Image 1: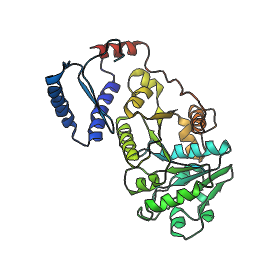
Image 2: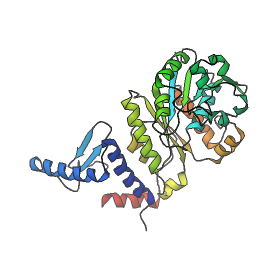
Image 3: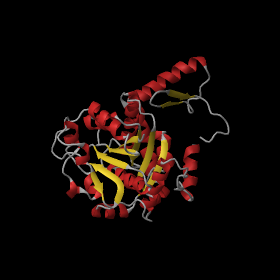
Image 4: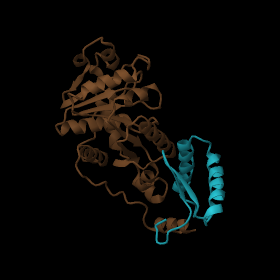
Amino acid sequence: MSVPSVSIAKDRLKVLITADRMQCAPDMIDKLTKDMYLTLSKYVEVKPEIFQIHVTHSDIHIRYSEITGEKN
Amino acid sequence: MGEVIVITSGKGGVGKTTTTANIGIGLAKEGKKVLVIDTDLGLRNLDVVLGLENRIVYNLVDVINGNCRLKQALISDSRFQNLFLLPSAQTKDKTAVSPEQMKKLTGELKEEYDYVLLDCPAGIEQGFQNAIAGADKSIVVTTPEVSAIRDADRIIGLLETHGIRDNHLIINRLRVDMVRRGDMMSVEDVTEILAIDLLGVIPDDEQVVIATNQGEPVVGESSASGSAYTRICQRLMGEEIPIEDFNRSNGIFSKMSHFFKKN
C-alpha cells in the first residue's frame, strides 16, 4: 500500500512553515537541528531518533527524550 | 461599542468573500446590526456574492476622499434589514486609501454597528495592511491544502506582529471522504499546525456554488455548509457550540497510520 498523500502534505508543510517562521531557507532547519543536537548532546543525554525542533511564531521548542505513556 | 473583524487568508480563492457574506447575513438574521466592507480596491466582489451589484452608487474610496457622505455609500439589503454593504471601488488603484484612514473610519463605524466585517484582499501588501489597520480581531480562512495553510500561517504571524492576537480559524471546503482515505488533511492536522482557536469547519458543498450563482446566502439553509455558517455565527456571538465531529480516519487507515507512527 502506498503512503497516503496526506502524510507527504504534512511533511512538506512542516518544513515550509518552519522555514517561513524563522525566515530562513528550508535546508537551514536541517543544519540548525544538527547543530542544536550536537551542542545539546555535549551536556545532556539526547536520543537522536527522538530529537526534534518545533518552531512557533515566537519560540523554539526542543524535544530530546520521550516521556513514556505519551501519545506521540 | 461593536467589533471590527477582518476576514483574511493570504492565499486567494479560499472563500474569504463567501465567508464574509454568509457571516454578515447570519449575524444580521440574529438581529445584529452588521456592516460588511469590501476592502479589495480594484477587484470588487463582495457586492456580487451578496447579489447587490446593481445598487452601487458610491464606494469606500468616495467615502474616504469625502466625495460623498457615508450614508450615501451604504447599501441596505431589502432581504435582511440589519445588513449594510460598503462596496469597494472597481477602478481606483490600491494606494487610494491608507491604513490610518481605514483605522479612523472603522473606529467611527463600530460606534454604530454591532459588527463591522472587513473582506480583505489576497496577499500581504497595502490592501492587507489597510484591512487589518482597524481590526479588533481576525477570522483566518484556509482550505486543507499545503499552499493555503502555509499562507494562513504567515498571515497569523503578521497579524500578531500588528498586535492583533484575537485570531480565529475557519477551515473551508473540507472533504470528509478524502480525509477518511488519507488524501486530505483533517481538522486536527490543520489546527495542530496553525495552533489558533478553531471557529468552524465548512464542508465542501456544491450548494455554495449554486447560491453564489444566484447572489443568495447559504447561511440559515439546511445544507451542510448553511448549518456550518449558522453555527459559526452563534460561536461569534459567544454561544458555546461544539465543533462538529468530522471523524478523522477510521477503519483500516487508522491502523495503518498507527503502524507508520510507531516505526
